[in-house]
Length: 571
Ligand code: ADP
Ligand code: ADP
Ligand code: SF4
Ligand code: SF4
Image (cartoon, rainbow, N blue to C red; front, side, top):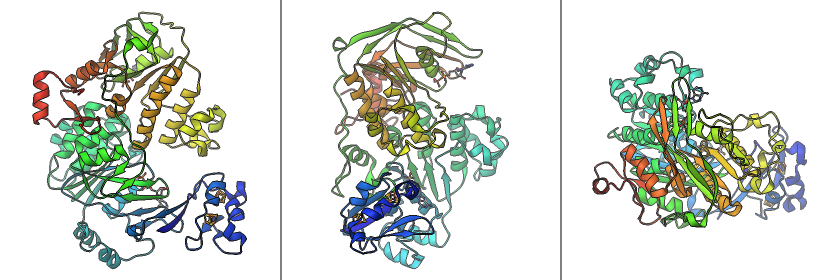
């Protein structure tokens, strides 16, 4: 075993704790330099050689910033390490022609891996290695040839960053003009058509919506002629149709290396030929698994157990393939009337329906068909045109766009059980305005669930959450609804999450930005069938895990299910 000690320097605050770790370490007490204080940085430095692994500092640190773990000897030295007591990444992926999907929590090293492949970071094998050592280390491995080309500067890489929101700050002007600059092979019209971008080509970049900006960034990347395409979270802001459509466009790149980091497992599955799972401890270390076929890789990921590696990294996430709970076991919470709403350019019509308790009602539908408007009407934030909706219910609402308040996170008064559940203890002292997207999302969900209500409305809770957080959220929301006997509405584009959660589905359809309509709540099978039929895509359930999988168009299953009108196979 090799012992590693990692310190999360950003959250370590010696001015508050007066170096408690240093004061409590039994080795330091006996006069050894196991923890010393770096005067310049004003941070502790832990010696991995002298540490006995007792774990006292880990437990005592009030900010949970120390990780001490033993890793198997076979892992060898890390491929890359960010300085003393810094995060480290083990192993490298295998570039293969086709699409390699990368799945793992945030902070586990995905961007580090991508930057290595793009030649932005030269792996240091722990510290300061040169190319000779790196090439020697990977001799005989599938990545050897790639690394040799990388070391010679012969790899042309293009990269779609995770956050697209900041693009308008650096790229100005018209969408079409900006894309033309990248159009190496004259594919602009084709790619724009396939990404459904025609309406945004003549807009200014500063005017684009999140979804348009995402497609702009992807197009800019795919138009380039490169050896390797690295796409970090391409599905954010896109609806299900756009996500699956995008998958088709990416798969259209032939004979190239393509790596995609993605937290929506249905999309990752549909998109990729292979997968690498990255596991470990976020912020401390990440281990890149061997390359796996996409089905096996995602199944093992959900199971929390990697077979070849013989490694359990979490409990299994099980899918309930039985029909969801019977209506008779649930009681009626409220009946809402038919709802109509008109804006200048948009009109919405929703059939009357019933909400039950306990229940999770999933809401699916294309962008700009009125899902958020409906939720806001239920929350009482927007008035319907045709009816005075007064359901006399206690409602708690998490909006899609979260506006952080002025105070510290702790001023929200989130209940300790939710602080624990969402792992947000370390954020309590932070100002809300300083939180990252994912942190803010978790705080907002925890705050929403803390409130005592009969109806909980969660608009896009998966946005900015990583795959682990989504799976945990799905599991927990189900328990929450049933333990509290509450009604929970969840609008989301992550089909795996919605499928896992929902007792019933409300399906929106219509022409984005022009009109939207919704049926009454349907059972999962009928709801999914309606939703998928409109998308013209069929889904099956994976035999081993029960998770939903999109069928490849024109595959045997696709044709068979289409002919039966069975777009969603419950099994
Ligand atoms: P992911 O893409 O999976 O979210 P990253 O590769 O961005 O993960 O980061 C993995 C870890 O490495 C994080 O804990 C991050 O704080 C740390 N890290 C990333 N870049 C640096 C850097 N330049 N210096 C020090 N630590 C870094
Ligand atoms: P979804 O949640 O399905 O993406 P929304 O309910 O957010 O859809 O929006 C539906 C349509 O209504 C969009 O075209 C949006 O621009 C329009 N819309 C929403 N709120 C307003 C408003 N306050 N004034 C005018 N148009 C609006
Ligand atoms: Fe000291 Fe124990 Fe922490 Fe190692 S694990 S640094 S020995 S307190
Ligand atoms: Fe204090 Fe924890 Fe930093 Fe040690 S690691 S100085 S205990 S905050």
